[in-house]
Length: 523
Image 1 (cartoon, rainbow, N blue to C red):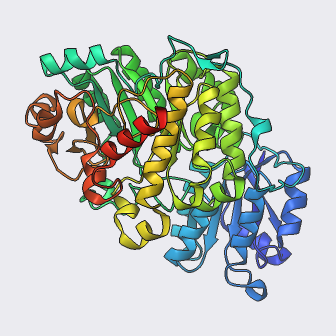
Image 2 (cartoon, rainbow, N blue to C red; image 1 turned 180 degrees about the vertical axis):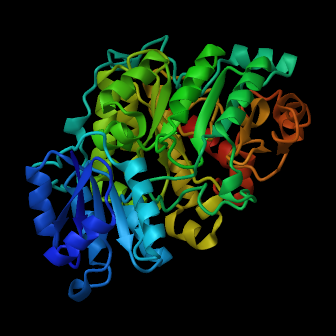
């Protein structure tokens, strides 16, 4: 028998709890009740059979949003049990905040007994763990400093202070050799495809700079998002065009998915000889609760399966300073989860090959500008490919107020990119191209790829607003051949980044300025 823990000051009254149990029985489960966060702590600490937490938002005298304080406390302690909020008022700001703090979903209380029972049953079905899992026995401490001790370096690409001559400065499936690009240019072949995963746009973070949140390119309701079968057909079409890699970049967190589509999709890609690359916040690799809920396996088993498939993983890593990282994603405890995920993937040697299959995504923001160079070196020396870029001018970072809050000066951008390239040169990495990804290989997305959103709309890349068409109405081959942006850039070894330049994410003349300063620096 599994247990559902209800944290609610009113329902914890014996007469109320008895009535609740009679009115809303759940097969195979029993209810347990706590009136306060401290009582809930004791139950969670001493019980291994709790499979789901149902947490009320309003605690009367303690405040109409006291439940959010309890939620934040449980997540910060490392609670791996899924949490569903109970609320009598559908206040969007409160529910969004609950999601920011780690709640899986919410159920409206007393919206009609039948409707509440149906919603409650659905939440238990979708989110309850197969087996109860304990929370962390001791509170998480927030040091606010880099967590170097959690990230060992199992593979070093350097020798005598220099990167090895054959070191591939890139991520498998992200970059292509100059020869591959030349052959693709000659034949007009597509090399890569960026896609959103289905079936939902759910994410358990609330990144303040998210380019897919409030994106005006999403013109259809979520109910019309792509289905799994459509993505399978898309992969087959991409393979017929010679695509070598598919990057899953959005729209939400690809591993928050009870249908397990992302794992199945990676298997389909491999059968077609395509290299999968998945961008993820990594929480599913750090929470046994999430891994069990969505994939029915442990964190390590899921990571091992992806490793067996040869998938490349890119983790969100804006800062190694815990307080800054957690604030940027509005999720207490995220930094520690990310570091645990990084350690697991390193233990499995995702970064033990050349080119590496482990990367980290780092957006240059005002809050982290002083750390970016050190983080670049830190990850580079551990054969973790740093995908360092300025903001994508879409979604939240297409809004001027957000840009003003997060963007750094043009001078800071030029100086940072120059310092990183100078480091590369000093350590034996050639700097033939000034990429839009600091210290990285050329971006070839505009000339040799396209981006398919969760609604099937097709754009040249995730940063571009030029709409090419829709895979629901046109063949991928026809979309590729009609892609005038791709035709314009197809014979360039490096596509720069016109969307970022035009939006001001990168200043006009940026690449030339970095090259000029680098030449002076190196000389």
